[in-house]
Image (cartoon, rainbow, N blue to C red):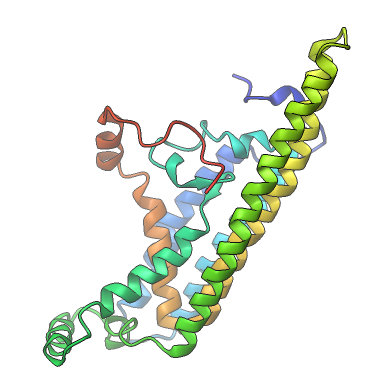
Length: 276
């Protein structure tokens, strides 16, 4: 079956896989190879391979966004309307074709808050330490990675969050302008043009060209946030962050969770999430 709006996709030679096939290969490598390797290093008493395996997973995420840009330049509709390669559980988390950038900072916040939400009293501190000591299957650096994070990390996280509060609404505003301009073009030519289908196709083509620029900028923002978070953390924190992000993606494919979601009678989201 043709993809939605495929009649106005940019026709150019390409040697790349269809994005659905690429994503399946990328996801399987993430789940079956890179995530287990990183998990193994995080549970090892020797941290020798941890920086290397953290960087492998980071590059895997960055290569995904590079390919996402290529797929969008070939046909941006397959990114904006990803029903053929996204399941219903993923759709509510999407912003301009992929994970909302707020998810990355929220994930980091969740690690910090979970480790420090009982740090107000000395008794609570002692309880946390006792629980950590009892977890003998993990290195101490992993167990204490998020306790009392450095001021530099908190400051950098706040700066990233501040940037997102400026940039995400700006992307949403651009989408609204593109959609408004599309409606205006169609309305302007509808009454005067005898070849209405051609007029609509031309208007849609212009809209998709403009949406491509927005999608590429959104991917650039996602890449930037991930890199900045890893750069702001130490090797254990960065590895745990990337492990958590990978586990989040793997969780979307959990058959039990997906089955429960699909049996739910009340939809969470009525369509593709373009805005914030």
